Structures are given as C-alpha cells and as structure tokens.
Image (cartoon, rainbow over all chains, first blue to last red; front, side, top):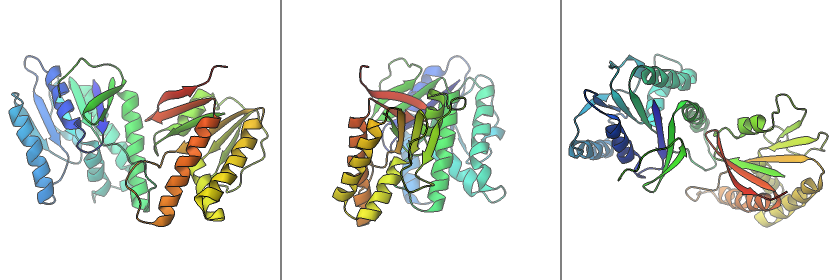
Length: 181
Length: 141
C-alpha cells in the first residue's frame, strides 16, 4: 500500500506522515524512517534535529536509514512500514549522482519506490508541492518536470493521496480515519 | 468553453486528452508554446494549450498589462462565440513569491486577470492536481 502526502514547507506533512505510519503498524511490524536529505549545512542539521526529536517523542520505536539513492536496495521485511522523507530530496539524490545519467532520475525514483511498496506492508511518501511560479533556468524546469511526472505516477499508483494545507489534510484520493496532528 | 488549469507538470494535457477521448476523436490542437498567433478554428473540438504563454506573448507585444488584457478579452469573446467545443489549458503561475523583475510581475498579474476572464467566460472549469481533476465551476446546460 502507498500513501502519498504532499504540501508546502512547514505545512505539517511529516507529522501527519508519522501519525499515519504509526496507525499502520501492528504486532511485529517495524517502523522504518528513510531520510533522503543530505547534511549540507547547519540549517539542514537543525531541520533533521527537529524531525528526530519529534520521532523520539512519538512513543514508537523508529529505525532510521539515511539514504538518498538506490532506495530499492534497502533491506526490508514484509511487515515493515516505511516512511520516506522526502521524494524531492530523493529525486535530487538521483538527479545529481555522478555514476548515472540525470535524464533517467525520475524513472529510477518511481521504480525504486514501487519496488519497495511491493514488498512491505505500507509505504508512506512525503513530498513537496511544486511551485506555481514562472520557472526560470533549464535545470529547475527539468527537475520540476521530473518531480511532476513522479507525482502523477505516485498519485495514480497510491491508495491514498493527501495534500496538507496549513496543517489540514485534504484527502484527494481514498480515505483516512481521523488523526490528531 | 472549458477551462482546465493547475500547476505546471500536473498532467493537465493528459487529463484533457482522456476526458474528451481525443486519441480517437478528430480535433484541432493548438499550442501557444509552438505558435505565437491564435489559430482559425477548423474542427468541432478545439484545444488551445499554453494560455499563460499567449498572455505573455500579448504582454510582450503591447507592453502594459491593461492593453494585453484588453486584447486577450477580444480574442476570448471571439472564441466564446464559436459554435464548437473550445478547451483552454492554462498553467497557473499566480502563486508564490513576488518576482524581483518588473516584467515577471506584470506577467503574473496579467495571467491572473486573464485567467479570471477565462474562468468567467467558461461554462466549466477544472483544476488538475497530479492527474486528478476537480470541477470548480459547472453551469447548468
């Protein structure tokens, strides 16, 4: 099962994703948090720290994996719940890696995510809304186009798609039971 | 007229093709990304893609948002009078940070106004979010 969650920055996406992930677990299911962002500066460290603290307070045990390419190679078991945070940094990882062409980055991301979804209990995907602005720079356009194509595929494949607006989950596809953010 | 909008790379074009069954239906597809002039209509179903680009073309030609919008409205009136199914696809570029560059600000403003005109002139308006359409206006026939 795939749950796709998107929204603006600081919109409450990750909090909702964690709640939904914890709802999915039962018995021996592991909660695996896959962090795709790279530590690049102190601001990024603070961001990561903020997310780590919230998971520590959540009352559940999380296993954290830091990986931004080749997600399909992560070891999983059939009862796992994976929270992947987030698709935009994952695409950046695949887009800028030096050993493979950037033009196939979107296909690699989709292939890896669908492969993971096929062998675990649930995959909760967090992503960021694309901008509604005139885009400039060919690399930005290329990246945005790839992200848009990935989002279209994931929305098509998922059971539940949610757009988080200012902490309010707007369910675009499927249904969820009420959660407290 | 039918206005289909949403953010860039959200699957608007595919949605229109699926909704109207255009793979099997004769139609005229005009892209303002490829041609700068509005076409003469020839088919029962006409799709005009890249309305925001056409707005930009008019703005470059007429320099002020007011003049560009006036001309856009004239074109829109003509399209509305056509006894055909006319579908307009426009990428929403009106949300986000105010651009530094004055032309970009004008472009965004003009697009916002023109999209309001298109929505007002259209019997049906849909927004597309990663392939999922949402009807935000539908007039009784």
